[in-house]
Length: 202
Image (cartoon, rainbow, N blue to C red; front, top):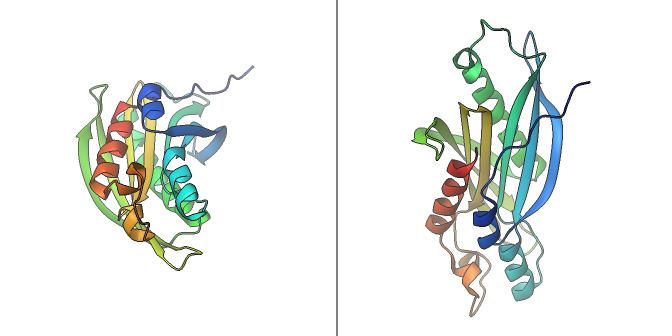
């Protein structure tokens, strides 16, 4: 009998300390190759500390930041002559398209693909990161602009890790007076945290 793909290892302590909470786990076919079906085992996290701080401050409930990690498996397994390097460009392209679709599904518009850069993840493998930008009109009359990052690499199997965060502090965006600490965080703070989470996936 086939077994479900193993979920990726995520930095649970880092996530817990940062006020993140697991909101979804799923296994699904993410795309197909000519010779195999590619399944992804995904964990999705919401920054609930940020969400609760906004809700307590102005009564608006929204997911302001998210992070997810996916481990891929192939059914049937890749043939011995097909190395990871041969299909990495396809995996990267599909992962980036899926991330843009995810933003669309969340209601974002004006989705644009940005620059690409290479980083070394904590496992020692090299990942290519791609940025995205998008906008969402909020019910309170403000526009939420976000930056998203998608990382793809091959180490102990293929890994995809991604997330997004606001381009302004939420205190400024939502005009919150005397904001609590979670709402004073800057885009630079968000960026550093997200990239650290992406690099820690194994």
